[in-house]
Amino acid sequence: MTLNHNNKTSYMAYYPLKINDWIMCYNIDADVAQESYTFIIYAEYLLFALFVFALVILLFTIYKVNNKHQKRLLEFTRIDALTGIKNKETLQNEISTYLKNDSSQQLGALFMIDVDNFKTVNDLNGHVIGDEVLKNFVSILKESFTIGDIVGRAGGDEFIVFVKDIQELGNAINTAQEICQKIRNIEIDNFKGTISCSIGIAFYPEHGTTFKDLYNLADQALYQTKNQGRNVYCRTKGEKKMKKSYVYLLTTFMLWGSLYVVSQFVLGKIPTFTVAMFRYLIAFIALSLISLKSEKEKIEKSDYKYFFIMGFIGYFISVDYQLLGTKIAGGSMASLINSLNPVIISVMAMIILNEKLEMNKIVGIVLSLAGVYMIIGTGANIQFLGVLISFIAVIGWAFMSVISRKISNKYSALTLTKVSMLIATICNIPVSFLEVQMTHPLIQVDLGAVLGLVYIGVVCTAFTNILWNKSLSLLPANTCSAFYPIKTLTSSFLGVVVFHEVLTTSFVLGSAFIIVGVLISLLFKKRTRKEKEVLV
Image 1 (cartoon, rainbow, N blue to C red):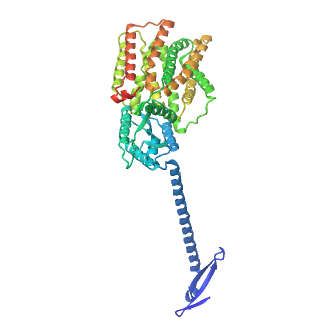
Image 2 (cartoon, rainbow, N blue to C red):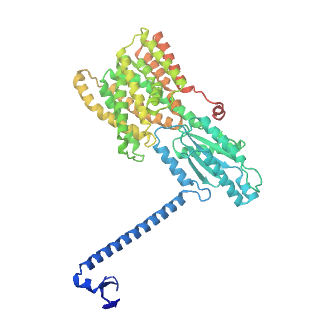
Image 3 (cartoon, one colour):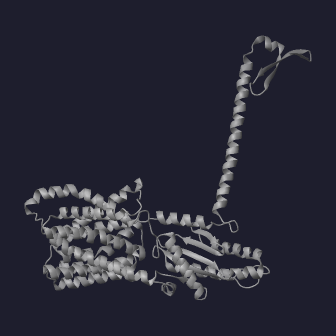
């Protein structure tokens, strides 16, 4: 098609785009048309590129808008529509995730807070003012807690707050009392009646290490608070659970005390590392049979190193040295040195986990070390090498105990113990093989030795570890560790009865110092006045 405009001739050209009936048109000067048509191809490429670029921008914009919309929808499903804080499902998931991954086990608290007589508030003032009460209530909660704390609405007039690090019990009580005071001071126009709240508190890890345990105990505390006049109330474990835990602990430490005597008998017939290898192997088999009924847990690769530390240092090095120290120093002496475990664990926790070493623990350490000096430095009939080996065993066990806390919330006690014992068994096999090659003429395998090995593996290792970890789930670790002297007394008593070991005056006096030092380290703690009021 020829066009004339302002005495200039041009041509109208077109090119089909093959999309429906679309075509691309060009207006070309006649002079240019006589030269070359290459520029048309370039123009087509440029136009196509611009078209693709615009299409990409359009699709990207649609994606971003849709993604933002999806995030907003997801956020709406995670928060409470009225108050703007987390709903119950999100609250539970976040708290459970924190508890599962927490390695420091710093003192935390779960607050369950309930608006008193909220139905009456709605009946007297209407739901609109009732909603205003809840909004003001949430504002007070946000002011009272930090950004790192988990705040949410469990439903209706019930709210839950989890504080990750409260430093000490008194801080939680102060916060609860401040909230109660602020709630009473809420002012809303045309409001009839009074506003107050009740709070139940459960402490982590003392009252539990799972959301379910803490929630149930805080709920019980809240219920008792309302029955006692709607005030702050802190609930400890139920009396039945405490009594059951005490039975577990007494059984555990008495059996561990008997371990020294039985192992001393077995070590007279079978060499040390061979006894250790069969101990772990028998315990591993027993725990594997028990775990057949439980759900299999997958171990993360990042946690392999912790299991290796537990198996190699905690069971292979520490427990093997414990047996060797028992063989050289005798059951009473080895058990006595082992009673330093709670004190050494406190020092390890201060170094590795940055836990505060309180004055009572310092006094306990001094008294315990004085007791050891009285036994060693007053001419008592002892084997210094056996004492040294036993002390190394204590340090290894304390180190393993502190390290294991990093993954104690991620895996069950059964899995931790079973896998660690498997590692210890593997580590002991080559050592035991060399030991047997060197001492096989002296090995005496008889029915008594076999029964002793089974007792050590099943009763003193597998069974006691289950009881020990069960007790830790019901009571604070410090309370559980305070039972360590029972092991010393049991082994000393059995050592005298069975092996006729002689207990010198310095031994008895030193034992008393160590036991008193351990008890002071674990049981005596300075508390604030408000802590005393709520720890019932």
